[in-house]
Image (cartoon, rainbow, N blue to C red; front, side):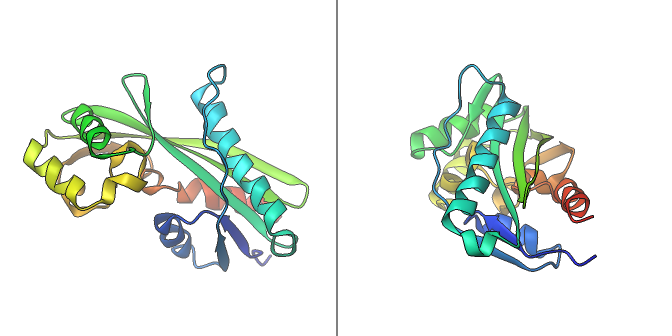
Length: 193
């Protein structure tokens, strides 16, 4: 069966690049929803809910496009020492986040949602990442690129400076970039059967 068009509810350039790897037709649309964690909910419940809210907002904003498309959205966070690291709000926060990750292992969680007609699928993927210690001058050089400010945990594993300090990864690499491709593809295939 032919895969319907995907309506990607994200303006993330990384998610667009990753989805393009699947070689299926998709359109990326912008949605603005609050990405607020609810204290009473678990991390998994939060990222899945946030992803679903984005998908539902895309359906509301783009009814014509979404009527025959699978809507895909995602939310990625970094968890370290029991703290949730989202996108840093400035240089000081980026520095603190990046310093806290040095020489340690943390988890990257991506909640994703698929809506197709009346069908819905939400899930979360987790990947563990370990960094070697990174000198402060290297962290500051990375921050100066501006790259940390649109990424959970203040880093992109695919960025050359950061990639050179990754000493281990357990789980889906693409999840750390922003979309667990194999899990998403499997869910898409189940939806269109």
